[in-house]
Image (cartoon, rainbow, N blue to C red; front, side, top):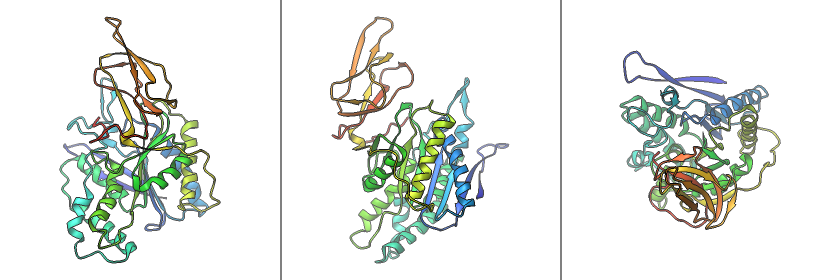
Length: 373
């Protein structure tokens, strides 16, 4: 294992932060897998999973079993990890700018498309190599104004040469689920069977340029732009993996998740050995646009009728929302047929806040599909 230190310059005198990445296998070997955790720094499960995974990768490497190159970043957001307010951790937004740490990544397709004219060939594999090199050059020349810019570009720079990317997150109170693109549907199905995801949410561009899509979506957009003249394969398949809820943090759960990721690494050929069978059945592969995001019409107390992981029908009441002053009750029902895969973990919400998400096969939403928050 090799350890790399990636310093942040510091926005103010006397401050210093850094990102540490751990590298296994041979640099440049394929498949190249990049796994990071803690981009939303208050989401702890992924960081503990990554810690357990590092122990497994160390053992694989000692046994000579690393075939490709595997990079793990267990703490992807040192800025957010250091933030707090009134003894509450603030890891989702950068306090100075208010920006979500998992939004606004550089648009690599826009950066590299002008640089590719006259360079692409009729060899798809060679085009992947050319595009990756131009992505790295464009990212390196992009202006970095703040530590947040620097952090985004360090993480994206580590990920962009990779064939596959996992960004480990968690939801509030949830079953394990993950996001990927329509082009990666089969890949996402395989990942779900190894990790135990109950739902795979599919979208090519969900809005906000989140980290996983900044790795994968440029390849589709470049293929749309140049594909009638030059073959452009999918150069990167990426997923945001939601490792259940905020409270699902212990060695038993996270150690098991690390074991499942290790099995998946064998299945995709990054680690040698007998390929283990997936331990789980398929998750529901559905459009992210089909999710019914249930919104509170008033502020009040939540009393859930349905547990996460429950299959529901349209019209199923998910929860009651109770005004503690007047006693008025609002029964909140879903429009979707699917699984309640995530819900609010607090039991008091403000008007306009999301209280739960139900997957569905029929699109219900358009525009930006990811909340800015």
